[in-house]
Image (cartoon, rainbow, N blue to C red; front, side, top):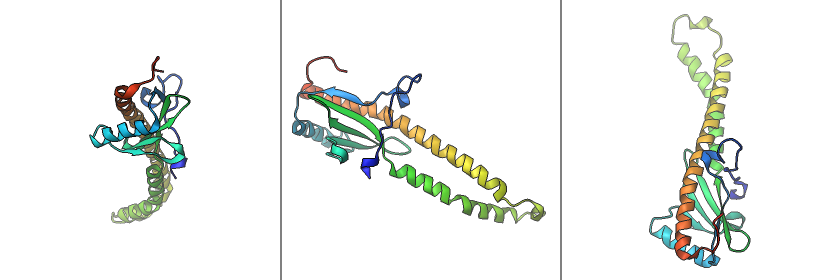
Length: 184
């Protein structure tokens, strides 16, 4: 299931980078081995500096930092790139958006029933057209907009908080030994 997670922060022309102005993936140079990186990040996580840290992960990830972003959660995945580089990427966790979409679709028809029952309480409403003719299109349009707005907000907050997490990881690795040379 976590293999289906797609990166959310790709550069977009004219918007200053990806969602929220962040540009992922980010490469961090380091001369440390994988075990040393994980040990130092685990220590930082135990001190509360890197909440949601998990060593390893699906798809050959070196480590994953989960549970940030809102309303849907994102995760920061790290993998060993070529040589002395660690590549960090932000991805939206897919389960919550799918639950939101399914529940939104499943609640349209009960809404028609309850609204029709509500209108039946008022005198003269029997001559009114069936509520489903206007309620269903209205619910579909606003539901689609709600999903789009929630996904967009999640991507932006995930990218913004991902930048903060990258800086925390960079801070831990900076004390640990960054590879010499310019930071990309």
